[in-house]
Length: 97
Picture 1: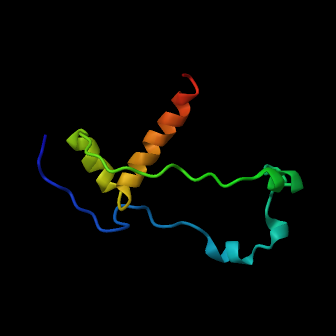
Picture 2: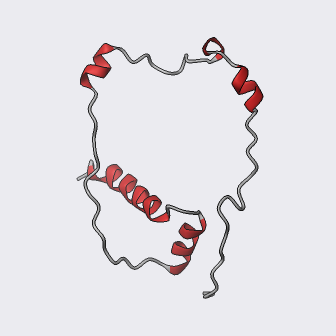
Picture 3: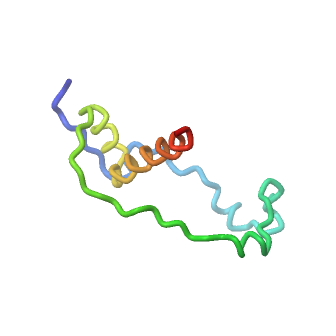
């Protein structure tokens, strides 16, 4: 495995934003198709609750060098992304236990 580090500037390597902002800005609420979004009624808001994830703990973790470099190359916040990946795995598998 190579020990070279590839560094990227923020936003480098990302495709140019192709959003049609003029069309978007000209849209009214009536132009938006909400048909696939369920309406959130009073019951939803009465039963809604804020769920805060448990606090984080610092640890030392051994990760394959190429995996770590790839995660870092994705940009700022790579540790939070690693945590999100682990959380998704945890959520998917804790129901099986």
